[in-house]
Image (cartoon, rainbow, N blue to C red; front, top):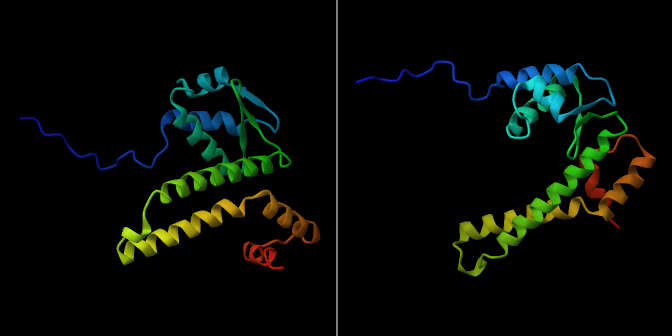
Length: 167
């Protein structure tokens, strides 16, 4: 009977060889450079559209190590973004998080709070409150209020957001 030995150095939490090679190619780019999927596949030595996690890991490595951000160009590849283009990625993240919060709230609304135990009821109310905050904090109105405050000062802090709602 064969026994399998446990690997003392598991690969979980480590970047794959393909991702490391691809991150080297990403780090070598200049602002505005576009890497097509053909370029990315060649650098990674795999199809990054099939193995998307390789590309995502390489992008995270470049961002973490060199503060480089890459945007997706649908059907073409990725582009290294300039400082002026990076905020657009943040706006996309706000839209995604609002959509996720809205979907989570729709699921929460399917539960009948009256039938819940007291502890579960507290959890449900807390979760719905947080999802509501996520959903409303990225609204156009809140963004406009934050933009007005940012025009007055370069130092808008997270805690200052609550004061934006006071009237």
